[in-house]
Image 1: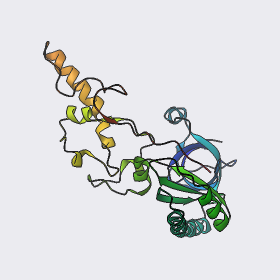
Image 2: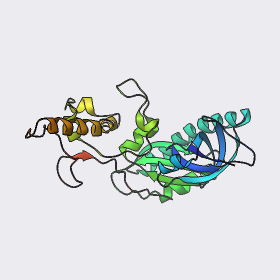
Image 3: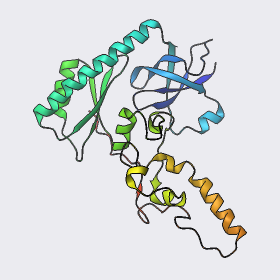
Length: 256
């Protein structure tokens, strides 16, 4: 009985899930699974082979219960519609309480076990009264999760200026650091408006071909001994020194 890699949740978590006895699932199958947060809808990506597991870092886990039925799809659509109403109610309470936070999104777990509120804030927020009001109104557990601007784009952004869906909302699982040195080495424009993504930070795709450009530069130097490094060449600057970089770090979660 194979295990499967499943993508689930608004933040596109990856987990390794066991399947019911005798059941097999194809790539792209929509399923209902039990995670550590409750019952959730998810998408099957692949079997959990040794190669696939080697690419995952601290994956979640759980059990696939069933492939989504027509009724499950209708229920998911109802929950998503309900979540939009919950955002409106939450925003009203935030304004009434005068909390210094920006509401980003609300995620209503499929099984109803909790509602996750995603928000931005410059400083720590005392949201105890907000949690009490929301829990009383929605009759479920409320989880407050503080995020950064990159995760905001992951939740809300659709397309980049390349015309493709934003990477953080499609295939990216982890977002590694990106620096201006990478743009210089690739002879990209240094105009911030053209090399910044929807989140306002340096585009993640500047990282994709950086190692290839480094190998090409090293090969060129070997062909011409004594040739000085091109501007922007060499290893990425160490953390805490060199040129500024976008490290993709987000603030620690504040949970109820």
